Amino acid sequence: MNLTLKRSTLAEICQGMARILAKSPYGLQLISSSGHIEGRATFQQQTLIYRNGAPENAAGEGTLTLTNDTLKSINSQRGGEGCITFTTNDNQTIHGEWQTGSLHSCHQFQNTDSFPEITLSKEEEFTRLDTDKFRDYFNTCTQVISTEVARYRIDCICIDGDRSQMIATDGRQIFIGNGISFPWQGKCLLPVNATFPDRVLFNGANLSVARSANELLFKNGPWIYQIQTPEPNFPDPEAILPHPGDTDLLVQLHEEDARQIEELLPLMPGSETPTRYVTLDAGEELQLCAEFQGAQATLPLRSTFWMGDPIHVSFNRDYLIRAIRLGYRELRFQAGTKPVLARNKDSLYMFMPVTLREEEDISVDSEPSCDNNDDEAPNDDEESDSDDETAGEELEEDPSPKRVSWLEREFTWRMIDYTVDLGVMNPTDSENEAEDLLNQVRQIQKDLIQARREAHIATPKDHLVLQPPATKPKWETVGQFSTADDRILELLRSKDGFFSVKSSERINITREYIAMLFEPLLANQWTPFTLALYYNGHTWWIDGEHTLERKGKTAKRHLTLTEYRPAHPKHLHWEMEILSHLLNTHEEYLPKSVRQKAQSRLEQLDHWANNDPPQTLDLLSLCLKFAKTA
Image (cartoon, rainbow, N blue to C red):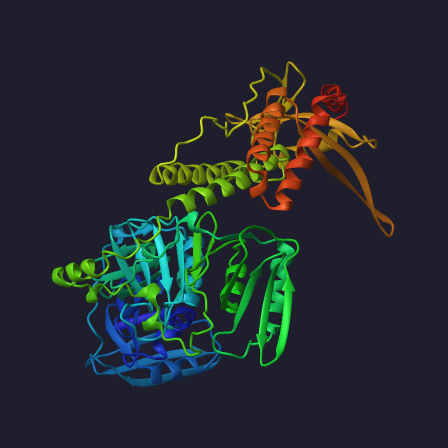
């Protein structure tokens, strides 16, 4: 056997495998072939493999195993960028040679044949993953899983190929990350070990995955991680996922309140108890309260929007802090012992409340959220007896009418937010933000229609048009521009004087185009002005001005776009009709802040509708002037 490789390559292999090598009794296995090297480390049904080219190993072939003591002996001698050569004649003794500066080292090591046999999937069976999203979900899941032995394998991450989800729970909290496509059907479990090599797998954007009957494999560059998966014995989170219509309190956290919660909640009384509970009190105002051994503290959430009935919910403060750090700002609460739900577009996070009767030491196995008691289902005879005993009892109340009432209130709130936000949208916002808001409104509307059917309540005849009428100008090309990355842009002007930019086949103004094309034209406009622009499918009048920021002897010029208003009368009247209808029919259901938002916007719209259009800056003459001087 003969093996030659760079010392830097051996160091890279040892560093990447450090977590597994620190626990593995087998050491590092090196497999040599002409111009290639493969390193393997294994521990408790998981294996990490390094495969790469090694031109310096042109004549090498064979297999050897280096114990951890051998690796320590080699790596302890620092310095030298040369190669290290291993040879063996009797397959039992390894002769190693390397150079450290002017020092030549020659050592004898014992070879071992006790390394387990490993079989890998073929290269073409791997499928590329969204590395950033998988890394974020994996890191979140590792904060949520349990390390205790329970009825379910809640020490693992559940990967659901059918629903494109990653799920983790410890029995009191659940995280579900959506939107990663996995190349298999059904569920499999990824055990979370301290030896998981995230440093090498999450380095770069080439993470891919494969699955065999009982193994998961992850690959990134020269690294392959293989782990045996247990039976998918995992609780079904859908069984406890609250229906949106069962909400008693909906909270939309303001960023300032979220910052205060993250900073001050750990300092409130009771932080040293096992449950670390605080109480959310929704009454005359929304506030967080904590009391322990005579000490009391209250944190009012004055900037936060909320809607619902008076309610008191106690929960572990760590869960709320985690939800905030994960970026959740919308939380749904129910009275009693139902889970708290935090949700955004791609993921959700649920956690259980704490009751005052609950003992401080909470066992995972007793938590109803992860124990459906399937094994204890009664037989047919027992079920029949139970029916006889309860025949005279009052049936459980149908939740459908309550769901209809709540969803009507929430739909009204969301529709007002969507309508007003769409009316003030500007090129600074994400192009998909309006679509995301609309999809949220549509989902609530869909839930409301279904709840009405279940409650046998007729749907009102009035039909709200969720999208404003689109503007369809006729365009003429003013000129072409080439960007720094060689994109060709066309500056367009409609017959009624609105400007936009065409990139490829799309016509849309963005903040990037304004800064790149229009700001140089506006360099000498020091009095307030109004632009006529087209973006997100509509025409807008946008007020702007230039300001100077002075720092010592230097001055910076800033273009500020302030007020955005719909230019098309149909858009303007659509927004007025929506807001007027919602306020007239559901005003008593709305939070005060939402009513004020809608009323203020209506006054603004009414003012615009009853006044002449603004005078706009002639960008065409500025373009011609700029072209002549450029």
